[in-house]
Image (cartoon, rainbow, N blue to C red; front, top):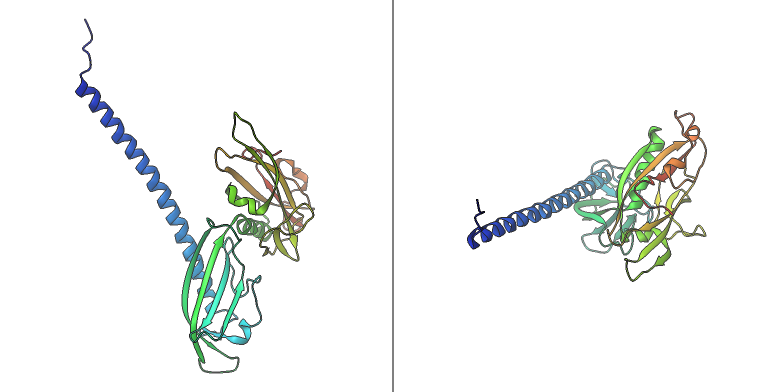
Length: 293
């Protein structure tokens, strides 16, 4: 029996149905990304509120939510006093209503990282001098939190040291993370996209975690951490075509300082199994995901 040929109307119907399905898939993908980003922003805003609320009842205040000027005078940019969020750094900006007095302290966001996850919350405040029983000034406090690769690493490293248990985190290395690395090499081809290679190093400088260059000099904003650390260096290939490389970083309690880019390069007999054995924390990456050279 001869096959019945498809009519133009049938073909058009199939094309329309395929187009509708394609639009649906694209719409779902966009909605997922939007919802995911909104959730991240919600977490950042919550972190900003938590930091601000903690500051209001910390050693910076009289215990009743009024900030003490002499305490604020003790700190500057670079310090994160009175409050701390594990994976977000914070910067506090405080001004009196008349604008005649102001204070800033905390961790500055990494310059140039416009796409870094951040959020700002504002709080009405009262201020006074130490010993005064009354509010002498009114003003506003602005808390800005920001999350970068460095703040995330500081978090897992501290958690590993405090708990004595290996901690991991997922991070997509993008061109934004070049702020924490040195350009090592660029290889171009007429047939393929350019291959970019970075040297990423982290070290402790005066008790602060910093991205450093080959001479050990800081190349990033640094953050104070409560964890001993022997250093980290990895040379990796940046996937230009994929616009990022999904990577698992691990902070591992160890018995002695060790600098190993790959987690698989850390011998089992060096890994601490008890808090008494732990002397420091090693930072490494899962080499199955990141192309290490």
